[in-house]
Image (cartoon, rainbow, N blue to C red; front, side, top):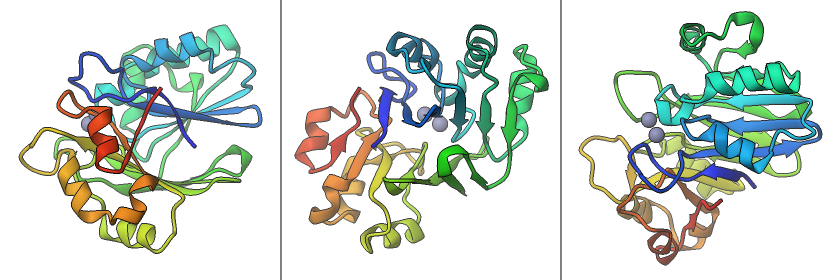
Length: 229
Ligand SMILES: [Zn+2]
Ligand SMILES: [Zn+2]
């Protein structure tokens, strides 16, 4: 099960940016590293005892990567850990370069799939979010946990993912869910999620990236699980 440093969306004033983490052995895995994530991670001391850190990114909106540069510098200079950044595109290197993080300060695993430490595997797929940058969802296979789906920011669940979920292929679905009605498929409205997920499967769906119009209580009333700190 993933733990969270923040559960909110970009314009939520009170929740921190959605970012998750889990630990396997001495490896800390982080999913996204938005503007608030680094300081939340420091407060929770999630780096203690970690000899390896893998940061798995979904896309380069700042609520998902805004403190990445700080995190890399902290890990290298204060913890002596050279982090691994997992992201399909090379743009992330440019983002780090212009914020003072050179290519020798981290390892980057590009491409759509990767074998990570501790037997963890990731497989990316394009998500439905915005047209201005590449955005990804991914499947994550975690020994002892099975396979989960993490939507990143996405206004839809791909049919292949939904079919696999309904057939029992995932142990949990983490889905970007909003209360606002936004034109296009930027984020997935909770009522649309409610329509496509049958009742007996709703408690396996964790709602992430919540916006100010969606309360945790409303998520529970619909039968889903709100991501919580
Ligand atoms: Zn976002
Ligand atoms: Zn986004």
